[in-house]
Length: 496
Image (cartoon, rainbow, N blue to C red):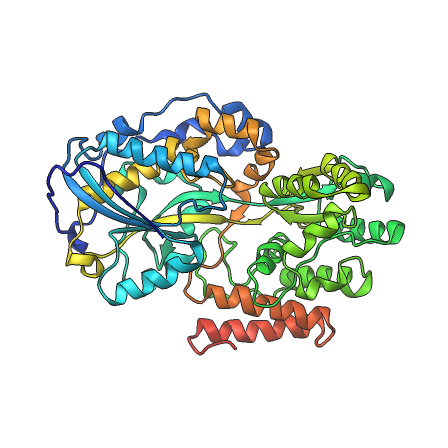
């Protein structure tokens, strides 16, 4: 754990933050009008990068005066030893810039590991010792919003508008019609393939499958021609990798766990056994059980288990983040002898493309990332929270400049205007394939924003896949069984 305290302490003026006075609306910069989401593509992303300058100190100074004196406490998962140096550099640069912009705001900051953050926060809330502000993984906040621990928080409260954020990201912080947080960074994945494997199997090496039906066909052809798995299916039980890679199929075919893929989801309509969901499950069954073109170990695989066969040239396609290219490059650098020649060839032939569509042209991907939240003052250590200092920190963190720089390694700015910054231009020039994964953002769908989402996604969905793939149930039976469990969860009776 790391702790950082603001370097200047010029007195405290702590304003009690109550539900009635939470975060008054500030004048919005309304940046997003400069970004045309209808044109979003790898080419458009590159064309707007570096086209606009922003000044976080000035813009946030219009929300909270830069000479404001106060204090803010903050928990988040910052960079640790295993992270690249640039992550540490950007984190330090942020706090230096914030203290320069707000020299009279004292900061009490803790960087807590990803695996420890939720449990530590739960414990702190029970003891009324939580921070004023916390940043959590994208669905981490719904548990605490449902239990009444978080304050309502919308973009206008800190100087922005809804147009400054992805619609899918704002859905992830909306619980029972109330916004209780802001997106800080967002991420999506892409389809990765080995162009040499494609060529050797008689497929166009520079054109990935356009639809999920094509994925099934390509996977079969690769297996039949080369004797290797064509698609890296992931179906491990109780593992987040599984729904992150299977739900895009379900959504593309017109299915879902609930109605999370709709424009205005209720999270009460069960869709896990509709025709689209069953079609997606049938496609997975076709690859695994009929064509046998997916790894036999798919039932116990996470994405990590796809990396070794891919770098060895023994896997045709998989789904992953832009960081996968860096991982393959690293694996290739450690290979020796004949293995190194193969690995270097795989890296040279590694390609990224948009995730396939369903039969009707629908494209979808899981919307990942993190959100920032404000804790109700009665659960904050000392029983008080500083409204203005809270607003200043959130405004600064979510500014176009800093939401881009703080997401440098493997994510994207939560504030859409960050895509126009010089920092984004530099990222695109140095992180290979970032433009492709970034272009998937308009197709992002968050998991259902309900406290029961982890059980649905990490347990029920993988169990459904296992039941179908192993033949323990038919596709129809597996989907209907999953629907009964989801219905029980939604009704409050527990699904397992």
